[in-house]
Image 1: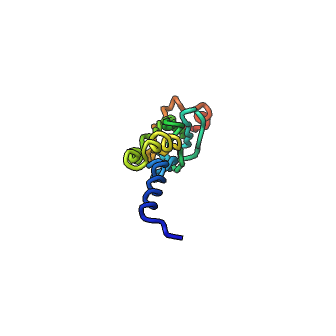
Image 2: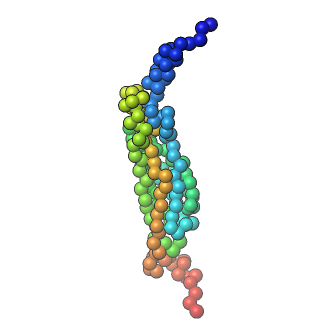
Image 3: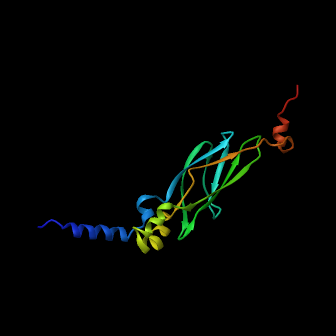
Length: 153
């Protein structure tokens, strides 16, 4: 059996890249996101754009989230933070277009740009971290239970 010629190998490589998306090759559809707060120790809950709770925990933490919500639809998350003695806070975490997606113009072609990357969510990326600075709750916002446990000396 004869070894494959460099021309055939080049054609096979080009064909392989043509049926895949650029962002799908060099990027990902899920990303680690650091969830932090000031002060730390706040309970957080993350909801996707459909309102479904996808993760909860205590700061600081790291979560892995999907960047895409569907075909040509980047995900948008709402993160709520709560800590006793502090006013609750809500932050939005939105996906953006991954720079590698534009590599389809050079490498992935129309199949990568219009089918593979949008369908897999690889055309989107998420920020590396989300942070919330919690403010001390006014005394009037402290619950009756907390007030009843306060002792004046």
